[in-house]
Length: 400
Image (tube, rainbow, N blue to C red; front, side, top):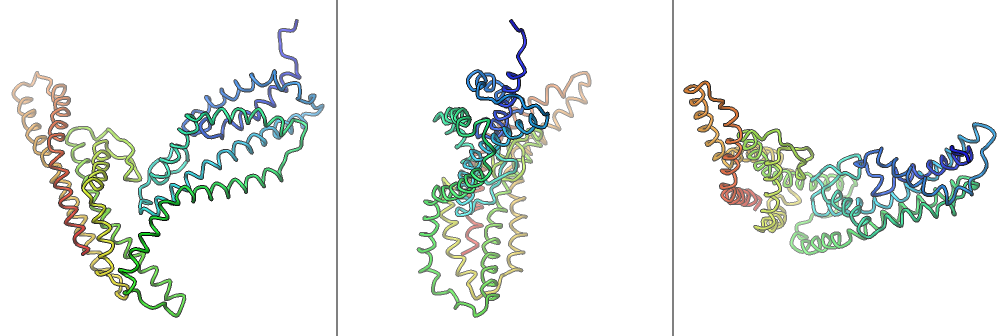
């Protein structure tokens, strides 16, 4: 009885592992970037050990030359990459739907880290991508992935040449189906945006100027309207930073500035309190119907900035400066209770340290500072929300 694997068995296991590793590194769910490479390779190795006794008999004999062995390994790896890539491409339909929804809802600026991609994407696209992974697991689609891996040895046996033409055709078809499906998934939001535009057209249609005679005139009109829209959106976005400023001040005063987390309202991480206040601001916008005022401001903007009027660059600059100043001032005001307490607390701890030098003030003051600061912040949270909503409503009223 031989106590070691024969060369043919090792060769078969190597070919199976080459295809398994390539597939597992790419398929949705198992092949995500947040899954460690060692875990993915361990799963591929386990699958290879399971499949070798089943399909090992179909493996051709070991080639006589080293180049033949290398070519067989490369061919199996290419087939695995082809299968994994095609399955991965179809997941992009959710990303396409998320991008379309974000553009239609003017939330394209809300970027966040996307665990399913190597780059940040819109918050809606990130949510849909993660939802897709959850659906794959809860609906047992990953079982079908494993079944497809086994069936791949019937479609692409070891003795068959690499199907480059079929792979290219399937990849092109998958790309087109993914994009088409993404548009279908986002169709309700696109339809709503179109209906809203049609509803607004009778209101603003009479003020629309005649079609320019030249292409440059059309391009200039489109660029001007885009600039006005960016101005309005940027000014409304600026004011949201007041909550971020308040969160940063509270974090510093409560010695929690090191507690960083991903902030869905920004493209970079921020303090946990700043992220919480940013999300609270979005919730307040929806629950207090400020988003209705946004739509009203959009309609009234056609009266404040008609089509025939030049871009108000000077007014926009002055309003932007005022908004930034008001945002920072409001952020300080919202954080004022915690700032006042921190000032008094620091003076008190300093006096205690001077009166009793032997007393370890730092070890007692630090946890007490965090506890009391967060308590005061929680007690003032209701007033913070009311004051912020009132100031935001006043800002929206500037547009008409």
